[in-house]
Length: 162
Image (cartoon, rainbow, N blue to C red; front, side, top):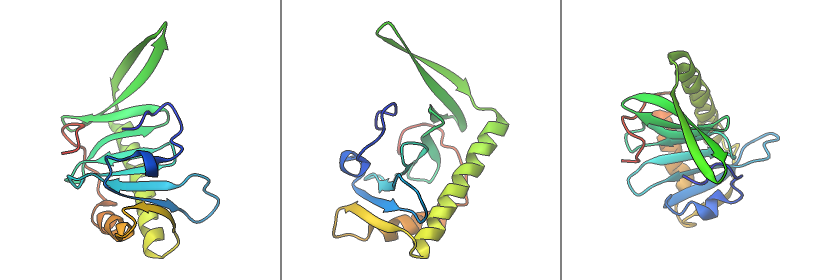
């Protein structure tokens, strides 16, 4: 995952682990693009600007994310937040389990964003501003994934991408 404390100025260029990736401008006044990309394993990541970020494993389960300034990771089917605290040249991670209500809210928000992206992409309302590789229809691959997974919410057993 990219360093989360800094704005991701060029995810399309920097996210080389995502072997197929696309940058999209959504309709309206959205200043930040959405970047979606696949790892070689079939795992996919969605970057809605700098925040939120949703990363899924190859089974379509949420494995990691970033929202509201907090890292999120899946462990044994539950979600945990990790908050970085920097003190005197040291970084301490504070970990806490998301409550059932907070997990439900995250799932609802995520499904709404992914569903809107699916609908905008399908209706041709997104503008492709870049993609890697340039000769593949990455938008179609993202559309297929969204059609199959945007309305689902399952949590991975581990934060890795397999």
